[in-house]
Image (cartoon, rainbow, N blue to C red):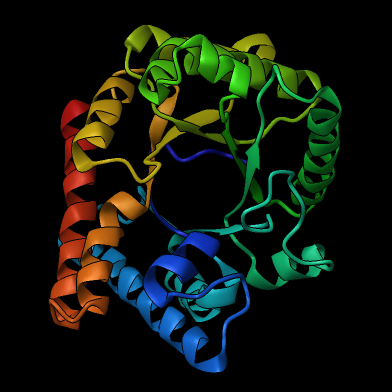
Length: 299
């Protein structure tokens, strides 16, 4: 498919973590009352997305990522209004990628997203057999999406192995800075060697332009034409801003996909009764718009 020039995504497809943090739910199953509350909270994020577009965020650059379980009505509304919308295909919280539904093809056809998103955990120096199984499922999904003209976005997280973490003294910040960028490059090359070719890679941010350029090179060498968007990973606004400032100057990095950093604080304040609904929606809209404006300034 033809990629947009820029893709600035408000991501709120969180499921397990969302249920635990905002509903106090343990496990994946919600009561009917909890499900309605979850849908209302996701609707608030969606209203923030729309409010930001009304306030000047370019609709042609904006994107929204939401799950079917708690956001099916929002997906339908987004389709009707012509937004760029994405929907996840993976089961939440799994160490090994699996499809969210046994009849996942029917669900993708029903929701009809512009992009289908998959989160996987993939460390190129870890279990080779696990990585092969995941690549096989990704190819299966990729083939189906290409047949149906749906975009394909992969979010491959690279969690540290115990050995890798030990090599940097157990310091996660050092792992992020010293080891993760090179592992991400190798991860992209391994997946591409396994014939996994998404339209967009949704990647954790890096601190240097050199590392960002290496990621773009891995995604585009030997005829690859995928774009990269930087994810927020629930980091502070300041840290995400640093990552965006690096990426905005690199050809091949086409935007961002930020979620909890945008909506978490406002939603938590609303759930705790500290602010009214309207203020929470306004804060979400303002924070999303701030990141869009930061990206556009740096771009």
